[in-house]
Length: 329
Image 1 (cartoon, rainbow, N blue to C red):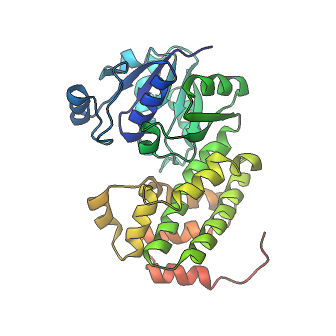
Image 2: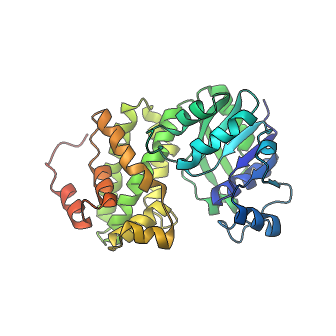
Image 3: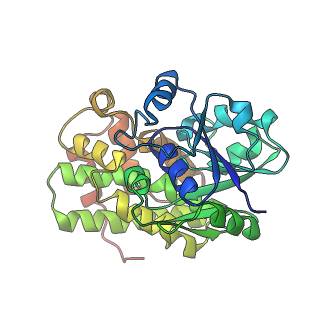
C-alpha cells in the first residue's frame, strides 16, 4: 500500500516536525490539534506554539476534526506517552479496519505498566500498532537536517511500506519487525538521560559521563532482553543511537531536567520552570517492570529515588560508586 494520505495527531514540536517531513516526502498531510491555544496559533500563523519560528508548509491541512483526520490511510500518533491511551480510545471508532497507528511517543504508561504498542492493541483493536523512534530532535527534523530513525511494525513488509511513505532525502527511517525492542529503547533512554544530566549538572566530568552512558546502556540491554527485544535492535538507532544523543545534549528535555536536578533544584521546581520530561513518568514504572523480571538497573533505580525524594543527589552518586566491584559483562 502506498499510504499517500497521512494524518499527524498532535501538533506539538515533534508532531509539527513530522508533518513537515511527511509533506517533503510528497504525502497528503492532515495535522490535527486538540489544544485550543495551539490550534488558534496554527490557524493564524501556521506555526506551532511549541516550535516557534518554523512555518508549516501550505500543503499541510490543519484541522480540529478528529473524525476527518482519522480517514487518512496511516496515523502518526504524536502525543505524550501518558496521553496515548486516551487519544487512541477516541480514535478507535473513527478508524477504518487495519489502519496503521504509528506511536511516536517514548515511554511506558504509569498505572497499567503497558508499552505503547500494547496500548494501541487494547484501546484501538481495529488498528495496526507501529512505533517510530530514534535519535531525533524536532527542531532538526523541522529544519530538514539529516536524521535517521527506526520504524517498527510486527509485519516486516508493512514496516517497510510505512518507512517508504514517511522517508525523504533528509529523513531516513530504517524499518524493523522488532516492535518491542524499538519501544523499549525509546522509553529506557529517557530515564538514563536524566541520570546523564545529573552527572553534567554536578560537574562530575566527561569521564563520569562516558561511564554513566556505557553502564546505562548495559541496563537498557538487560531490560530489553528480559522483555524479548532483539540485541541488534538495542544496538541500533532506537537503542544505542537514541541513548547517545539524549545523554549528551541540552536539547534533550530529559537531559536538561537532570542537569537542573544535579544543580540542586527540586523536581517540582523544574516542572514549573521548564516543563515535564517523559523520563519522570517512565522511571518508576520502568523500575517496577525490571523487578518483575529480576533485572538489575542501579542507575534507573537511583533516578527513581531522586525523583521520589527518597535520596539526595550525593546519596545517589555514592550508592552507585560504592557498589561491589565485579567483572564487566
